[in-house]
Image 1 (spheres, helix red, strand yellow):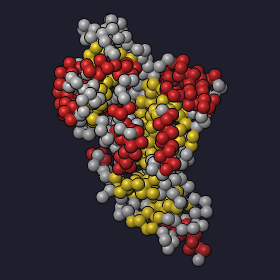
Image 2 (spheres, rainbow, N blue to C red):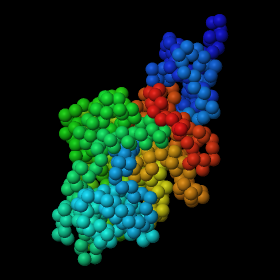
Image 3 (cartoon, one colour):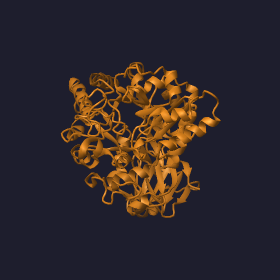
Image 4 (cartoon, rainbow, N blue to C red):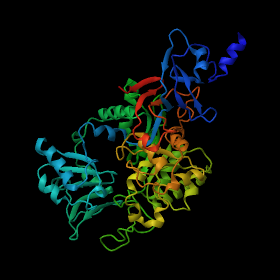
Length: 558
């Protein structure tokens, strides 16, 4: 008898004292990609009290079966660890379902205006009309818009619609009047009011200039924040996400997040960052918070804008906008002082916070790396496990790529940005500099851990679209046929890690989640297709069968 029990136990990896009581549920008949190097593949696993207790095959699970254990036959489905989006905006995702106009599908300025006009026809007089998602690179003209046509179509409602990247927005004349913007208005530090040849504002505000309009928009123009968070959670679960890293909350918003966790309404794992304006006050008044589903132990800063709106800070001028309106070289916008980044980095090291800094241009990335390095050296902490991050890291000078691993700085990147932006990157920076864009594989080979995400709602929130982009460097139409700069593709194993264990590592959570390993929390995603073996195009049609957090099914496909 003892020999039989030993043989059965040998068919599974167990957590300590795993046989003390029966499992709550046993899942069998699956292709399980564990992302655990000790046992990368399995066909069954057991869950008890929200944790994995055994991983192996069906025979090995029998020792965990009790009279009340749920036996779940997955009928050949594929299981991966719960997918994690390492850079996104939860409320931003939810707001598109709750009244903010989604313009991401539009393909011309005329179409954008028509959508806004339809909303204005039913909106109360004077009500703000808010939208986001337009992309002039998808329009026939590929030119940034002028407000004149928008103002002519909607003269009486203030209109404020953000570009897809969120780093530029368009206002009509009514909105600019309310904001007090005129030809005499000066550009703020780190921002630009776009102007026509006569110096008249076109209605486009870039980066820090967006605040000129944002400050006069009433809170009532936006949906309830808690409702946005919960709607975002619902969409995440439907997409197979069990966790996400939220990039930029206020302290008050993070308190609301904690309240939703305490009430049990929030089940998604959220690694929340506190945005710049609240950073120093938050850190000096509060210690990091580590809860069951929520942790608040990171700060978010912005070093520059985005390449799409030519606000990313470059080492050399833009190829397609070499000078500004005054004839000076145009290298984008520094939206933060590097010395301030260093100051915040020092406080983070003192207070136990992680620093995550948005940097897209090659100059911005270099300045952030320099600031991090100065802070780390000043504290004699070059090897400290601080896990500072650079968010996006889209355009890098080749000399800066090895510095990420050397400084233990995590490149937090979004695969689908590459396949969205590949249409115009060479136009922005020229073909030579473009070779350092979205350099995932090079970073990995230099020793970096790449945390993958979507930046939703900038890109779609479905992580499998990011997985597909990671392994193909193609858009959803399979273009270009060989992939854009295919040498930077991730392998499927790397891509899965980037959405699971590497993303967990980027939030100091790899001991709790990120792999299907005995002792870790039972977060997993069930798919109808084996994304590790199927044809690349089949990744795009893969369905989410089930999403599970802490052993609780939070979504099932009907």
